[in-house]
Image 1 (cartoon, rainbow, N blue to C red):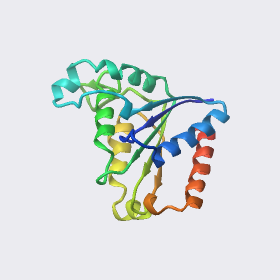
Image 2: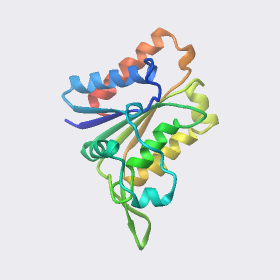
Image 3: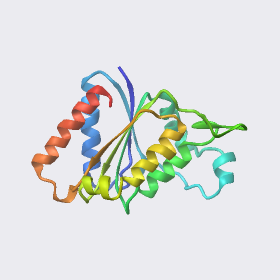
Length: 194
């Protein structure tokens, strides 16, 4: 059985969204298979955005994110869920990852290695992104650029591998039948912790 951390990245807490339902179904599948599941809702956390390299490298992690950082250390599998906003992850998600993936925790600087030493190896990840456009358009026309950057420049940089992605497109025009099919898929992914 795996230790799974679900990170809900939808910034809107005023109403439920498809991201929340997808997380719920993933968790239901994982729970039914006996996995140990923890969950973080980024929008429920109060933390400042980083504004300088000095802050990122040398200032203390905000106390409100200490538990989140420990959850990343605990997890064997990360599930990061967010909506595509202006072609990328919402600023709140990026700000959260910048805070949590600090030097000394997520990676170590090394004099002879410009990439440093990865601090979160031995963990897999799944990125689940919802979007208004068809997923095929995002994947092939836009080349899923922001998801690829997240995979390579953040999660891969600190050691997550393998990293899988689930792109859920056309959410505004999605039929109930299609929505239910996605829910079933997330249930199955949760069961196998992928």
